[in-house]
Image (cartoon, rainbow, N blue to C red; front, side, top):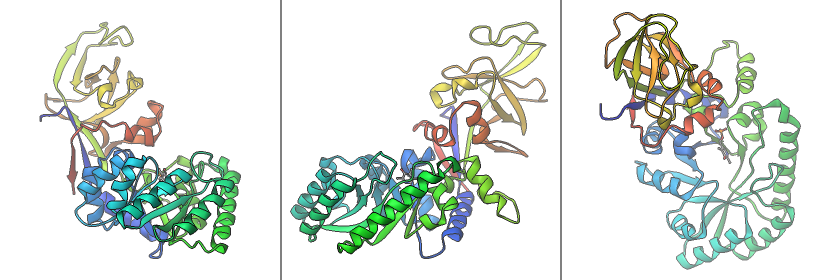
Length: 383
Ligand SMILES: *Cc1c(COP(=O)(O)O)cnc(C)c1O
């Protein structure tokens, strides 16, 4: 094995999750697969063609560089939508490649129409509205000016969508704020419509909104975390399953992160292990040295906390997580050999290390932990 760890992506799990999302939203609503953050750590190049095989034909990314990687890895034509960063120089590239994009500033709207005119090609834009998140989006005053530009540039701009993003649909704590946002969105859409601006698609929902606020689904949902088999929050999960007769999690995780035992070591009782004195062997121990550390996204906060699976048994990280290695206590596991598979995340035998448990220990959200898995860990597709 060339690399000290690798990631497996399970296709059957993705198909399961996509089927579930489709059942939830029905046939009239478009499913946009959100693949920003390197497809939430799963790898754009590996994930996107797989998603296409599972029936996905609409993708959302954050930035132009992600759109380019996506475009190069797709096996069939698909719609690509940039939700965030796109500098004016990249606008021309985007329009030429028929990539759709959010517009939340007048400057970009004007530039897009100028470039579209130059190229003799229409730009497909999604007007993002400020409804209360206070991140990106046109506020009311700017929206008036945007409307005027839209009217002047009808020949260059197609109003593909009107959209917004909710500020925390995964927590009921934000319920009133989400409702306010939805109300503001509907009012502004109504206002735009009455002025003759009719978009092809209204879209507002991320994973959590899709589950907890079905009225936000509209014409399209932008789903990230759930297609990878994770819930946006424990709250969204319990809200969903408590309404289901089976009470079972309908999602399956795609990801397994694995390594191998690099070396084994016997340590007598009373020795300190690794750097410093954070762990002293309470008895004679056998340690497995695993070639993964914080440089590979295995957080240092998992020192003396993390668990891995070896031979289908849990084994504890002892001492501090180093840059490239960590030590794991395998004293209780018989017949452990060098080169034995180590599961850092995912399933082995009847046991699993969930991102949730892992993330809680390392004080990271699912989202953060996944997207921090380094780009250069190889990703392999399995059935
Ligand atoms: C990330 C993102 C989404 C998807 O969010 P999930 O919680 O992963 O489903 C949807 N819309 C926008 C604008 C986003 O930035």
